[in-house]
Image 1 (cartoon, helix red, strand yellow):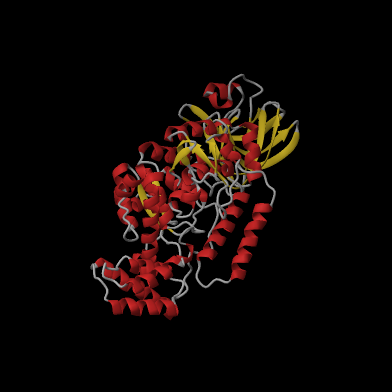
Image 2 (cartoon, one colour):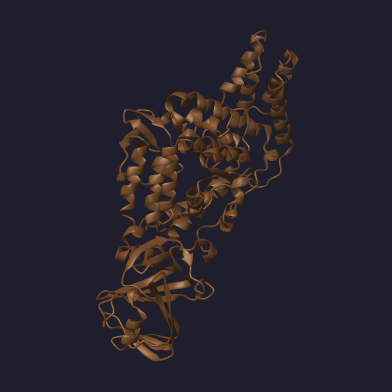
Length: 555
């Protein structure tokens, strides 16, 4: 593996793949070559100015599929890197890569049948779409900032189901030898997820901004914009239709967050940013609406609906990560129930002895103003604790607003950076208005008065371990062995590629034999005929040229 892979955290390395470069067929290289020729010819005039320079800066050439390790080395010169992956990776994971300034590149390449538009991410989309624009410093910083913000968005179990259904359908469509019935079943699975009425999660809404900018974004004059979105830069068809008068153009605004999209259909409208600085301004406005900035009841509500692992951060700075199942508020105090493995952290660092192994079965968070002192609980000194009757090794109780009390033997307290973060109790109970809420053998009571932030995922990601973000049960293209007919076809592509590489001019008889083979066995291979047309000499007969053009134009 190459340089960028070596510096990744272990939980991201599992998503990386090996680019089996020798497994690309000569037809695959022809697909790359044709797509890049078509794209660069059109985009020279219609893409942002950085695009052609970005292709050079990232080491991408038209002639053959690039090696991802070479792209990684080139991107390292402007502070980024690249790794190989297979197909759609979970959105949460993609953001974690991007926040580290790493571009995940799907190593597969679209099949010949999907040359103009692929149903799955591929190396044309990632390498020739995303990579060149990252050479622009302002845009690259937008991607990094977006990823840092978006990975804090609260994603839901519905988002996971949608990802898995999309991944499955895209993989099925790219596989060889798959029946139309199998594709129909995968489509029905996706339709069932899409039609299930659920509130769009915070992550889903923020993802729309990425779609309408980094994937399908236009920039500049509303009436004459330029293309910078990777989905457009990598689609021979959509890069043209995007600028057509029939495609509605809207000024980029927060409307993008409320505009859903269908990945299987051409987009009916696109958003136009004034410039790349406009992307940053829009993102800054989005940030002000998010739960990681605002916390409070709305953040808790979003997390409860999401039914995924999220983090509550308290005004003390302590962070509690797990799945929020319920919460209640009473006179300024909060009782929040967490399910499953739970983690305590401080500014993104797991507290020693408070990981998922120590808290495997959920947690009850109880915070609020203390009844017997005006001080915040996390501001209490040793003298304050003594005045409240809290002595280590002795039975004691502490009262919060709203009628909550914790009774038990105070075992210890923990202070960090001048703040009292938690009290450990033994053999006690939690009550409200003298009614039992929960007995306990041991209870680590974290201290705080309010929830200042709620964000997606655990606070200390690597220490938390694995948690549900979406799994892939299939791979693009699959592993079906090539048929003898396919092998013969790829041999023909290889022969033509070798002629071009050696600047060999085929003889009339060689042209005639190949044309006959194509017409007899591979009549749909217009790309092979187009490759041959590049080799015709001025003296090549019009009959041969006409036959090749007839096959090529059929595509």
